[in-house]
Image 1 (spheres, one colour):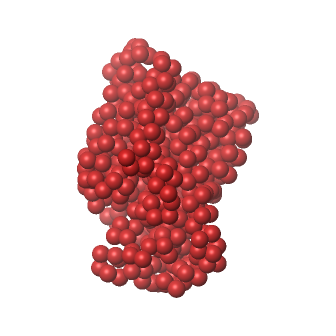
Image 2 (cartoon, helix red, strand yellow):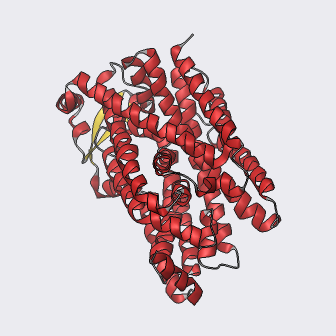
Image 3 (cartoon, helix red, strand yellow):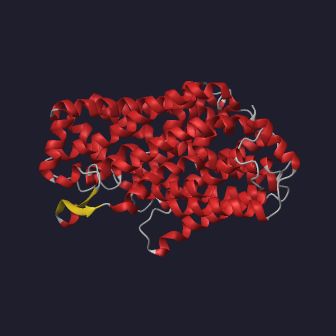
Length: 498
């Protein structure tokens, strides 16, 4: 029997077992959505990193590095993400953990906005939930596409068959165990991802003579591959391989660095901050997450992509298959199976989180708020589980087109969350004069900008105008609209002093 297949089956069995075990520990909606706020620092750290780095870490980002080397998107995206994640952990994590518990024990981002500003109209909660569902459909679809490419590239199966199998597995343990299952499986998946990229990049560098040997061989292919300020065109279907495409330009660099802004508005990452056992554990979790869960996998992915350029004699038809193909060429089948399970881990760790946050938006922010205000915890948990199924089916339909690009889907969803909720979260946590109308305007302006920016024809990443316009809207409407009450400001002062 194929060693890779055996490894995959064993890994998937472990994930489903965790889902079954944690099913018994999920009794309330707080358990299902936030794990009862009982996560330790290690689980929080790797869970946050794993839910952040979806399939694009081992498929999309190495693919970008394979197609363009240091230039274009890859290097500057990595820099922007590293800085953004560090700032998010340093300033947002602790304040959000304290504020969400202090503000009527808010367990979702829409609920936090409603409680933070005492919004009796429910508009903040409703509109936030709508945008969460909209952008998560694209984000979840990107994960399902990643899973399909993994099975397709590893076992040479039909794309659509692979798509359905991956969706069934991920929905299975998310449906059963909720946040507890997702967090513990994310911990395993985060460790596996970091290990896979660390050893693959180190082993590959040894084989090519270190960084010096790698850069020398890349330069022999095309000098633009080692120039962080130059673009490279990779047009395999047209027969033009790694062709210099001129300088990236200011807009290109700013667009790539702007990925770092997205961290402040990602609900599935912010949920980890809200779920940690105590705000006192945030510092330890930050050190673990940034050092082991962020830096190693992020830059390991870049190295792996560039190693693919100098390893394969025949350029790949799909650049996003580089990690999948590389490990099968370099390693023993048993080791390759374990490393390819890391790709599945990256995919599962984010899709499960996205499904969970989306289901919480439907169960907590729609169902209980508008249909069954007195619904029992058991009923809400089951509504959450059924919501997972509905969202997964819609995402599956979006992902059905097998020409879909993982990085394109992630890029759009990442910008959507970053611009829609990033400024709202930052101003809510750190500006005393932020008002309900200001945040509402910021969320709407940010989300609408991302949806419509593509029609302007600008090459600037929609994150930039969306984030800027949202911030401006929050400031303007906080000054000209209805001001926050004394009660809201007093709560802010207490949290700021905690």
